[in-house]
Image (cartoon, rainbow, N blue to C red; front, side, top):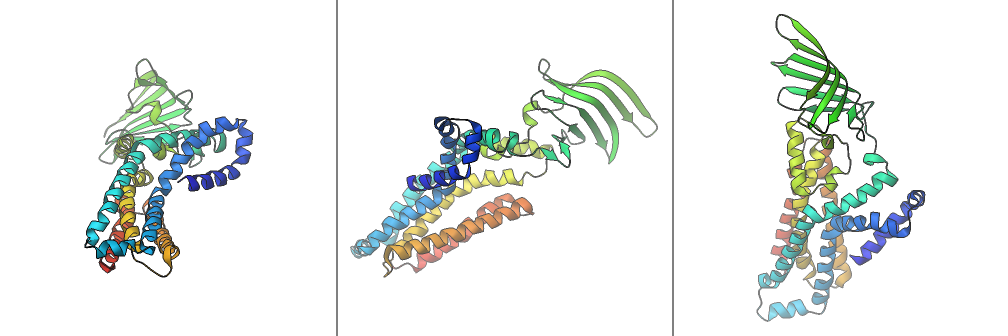
Length: 345
């Protein structure tokens, strides 16, 4: 972990040197405001690989010295020999599970805040949606839809607002306002210069209202476009956010759902790779540790590629996120079982 950390920090710092210089921050400030969050983020990504290589490395040394053969020849069963690997894998999986849920999101908040401030700009990128700066379109209940234009997150104010209520496929109520601002005293939105239309089968009633307080079922905190949001929220908050946005009919939630299920699937990957590494490296070969490491890294590379492909199919296609995240684990579960059956016992 220390070796990969040094390499990752060296590569990352070389890529962001210009940004660090432009920020005007000292080295200590950059470390505290960025790398304190960056290092756990890298650990979270590479943790299964760290465990896998470590298992292959020391098990291969045991096999090379014929220690595994001696253990099995003394009457110890192969399953009993694998038991410490199983227990160790479970311990490391639990550590990663808790880190994914609570620890790494805290670190990502530090890292993403720095990147949004000094590297990518506010929000981690452009907030332009279909040519409209800071536009939002939300469903606040089954039949009601709200649209905001040019929302200012600092002033908690929008320049134009509309609200439509639909029944049986027809608009029965329409509201337009020139501007809208959050009223912190009443915890509601204040609409200015409102034109209200009520439509029935016979006629349309139009009313003009200078000011109106309205409960739109969302707060200024929820009006944000943050590309880092999925990384910053801990798992309970992420689950609640996904549920709320699902009810509002928000599109493009597969990225968030993939992140949610990935946090549970990756710890199982640690356990799976631990057992695969033990079975591969427990066989004595002429190639020694080098061959074991080569085979192990090859398997890890295939696993990562399979994981990336399934994730892309979910985010860009119609593959359900939970299936996309767990497909590589299920495939390599059969690989682990096959290697276990073929292992010399």
